[in-house]
Length: 157
Image (cartoon, rainbow, N blue to C red; front, side, top):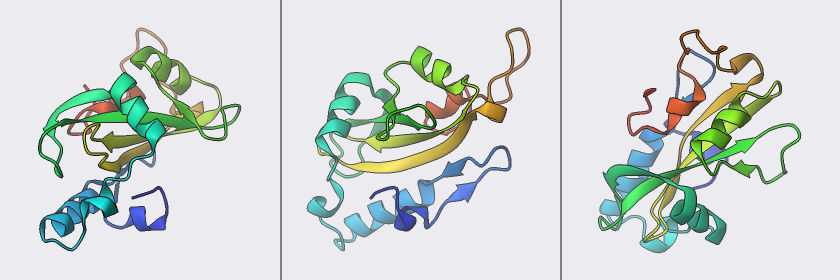
């Protein structure tokens, strides 16, 4: 499942800043797999670089893979925007993600759910950051900033 138009089916947009959740689309794919309409070859197709990022810098979740049911899934965040590589920047730490989200230029963050075991992957959410979406200055209360975007429920921590 890529970042194309088919990934947009079953999405929801929050009212604050254009955040898009892909949980409904994810659940539909999982349901089709369990009904036998999709095979592992169809959905466990993570790119080798995505698997490497998942194993080395992924944020572990307390949730088993919905496909192999053997390995915990992780979230990997990619950031795209001006003056970043065309293939985006994989945020290797929460500090790096915070720095990217504080940029003057607006960036878009894509959080991908990945199973390092079987290669299942699905876009979990995308959200704008940086620019007008920057986190407030120190000492002011955050407005649901980008650092809380990794959590299982999608709510800020």
